[in-house]
Image 1 (cartoon, rainbow, N blue to C red):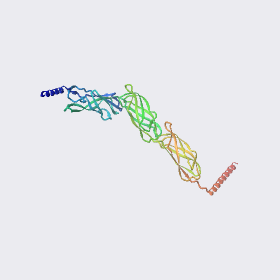
Image 2: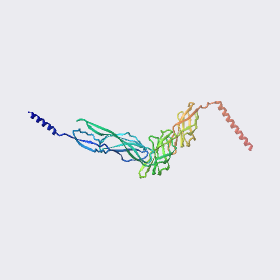
Image 3: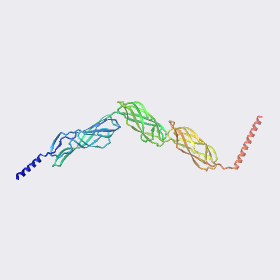
Length: 427
């Protein structure tokens, strides 16, 4: 009986020893191998708004792999870069990086990710190659250790690497506006803008054109916006002239306009320079003043109103108009003034009739001046006043009338006597 029990126990132990044990693949050694390259073009120009695209790749491979019985399976690999964070900075390059560092997530072995950074190439950037530091931060599995039958201790490490990203600033035409001269530019009219421009860049522009562009909601609206100048070598200076319209909503002040040069570069490509914004002075709308006049109750008279151009530019072919309202009437309410330079005057003559019952006081009648600007556009001034003073009609006096009649008779008699005397002497 004893031997039977011992035999059963031996068979059970032998059976347990013969049961298969699961084998787990384990990786030891290796780590992420990170690299970064620029994706797309690395050539930019001064003043350009650019998106710098970069590709980050993990090329790491494990260098030791074996099967170990009795261990716990895990998906963690030492070659995986976890929580990859990518940041681009300008360094010493003439670039402004507008993005914060970006998270691209986990990168397994042979994995890659592309990120884009918004950047501004400064307007004063010079030709040459520049390096932008790209910082890559990540965590990886440095080692793992099984503690007991069902627990694994992972040991992670953080790592920061910096890669130089090379960009190239291409030569280009760069403009400097040396002189801005406004010619007859006034509110509500058209005039000319004269520019003197220098190429301060490192590129010779071929078949170049200088353009002016409206700046946002500026009241300066180019009518002729492009002038062909041909070759524009570096260091060269040119002049150009443009026709510009000024909104009637503008004020007497300076307003911006953008200047750009379009040209063929050394590669034969059509490109444009960075825009240069300049201020253009605008004069106020042409205004006029008028002199006061006097009229007598119940009379019809020709009054003379003196108009003066109180603006800063010439009003061509000016015509004045007077609006007669009760107690006034007019059968001739327009007058030609001609060309009026700033500060010059001209006289308008109007025939006005006044009611007998018009109160004696000072009245204001509306008047306006229609004229043409230097570009022959027809314009009308703002309405302004002509002061008209109504005087008391002289009272009727009978005795004065009798004396006047006798005076006329006496003068007539004296004239007749003188005539007869002269005739008799001749005979």
